[in-house]
Image (cartoon, rainbow, N blue to C red; front, side, top):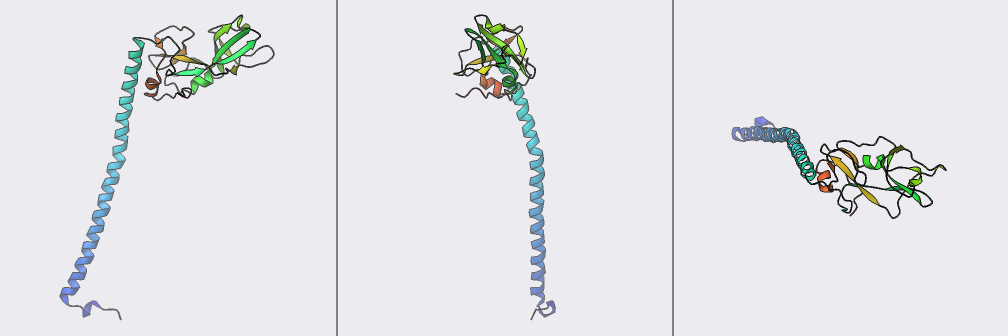
Amino acid sequence: MARCDIDRSPAEFYRTKEYAVNEDMTNETVNSNARRRLVRGAFAAPAALTLYSGSVAAASVSCIAKQLTNPITTNGDTTLVRVPLYRLANGANTATFVRQADIASLMPPGGSYLATGQAQCVGITGTGAGFSVGTIYTSPALPNGTMPAITSPIQYVAVRVSATGKIEGVISVPSAGANTALHTSCWTSFGGLVPFNTA
């Protein structure tokens, strides 16, 4: 049979009540501490991200500025930000191109000099199959409809980057202004991707 409070001694009765009160206080303390941790966590993360973003921006500006004091103008370094070449051939006459789609996949912070669907001729042999170096084309093709195919084995060309992070061209084609090829470590420091550097 259940024991009624009236059957308990005064000392036993008060010990039971004290235990119940202490249990409630303990639960309240735990809940309060959890709330404080939650609030601290909610405000700590954005503050840390803000500081990180600022440091990345500062590093990127410094990185490009340093590189522009001694621009890279050769294409032999595989650690440079680069894109693959595409080729059209009409007999011994060939033309090579870079595509906007590949440049866009680098996620350039400052944008690209090519619009969607465009390609730039960056090299020719013979007559160039009717194409000229430096000219930008929309969907280049031979008269028979043949479109450029990726070079085999794959060849690459480094892109030129301005002080603002915009891709302005490739180093095989001179472009006006202060620009340089850029090492991938510098490019990635401000959020760019380098999908064509597999080494």
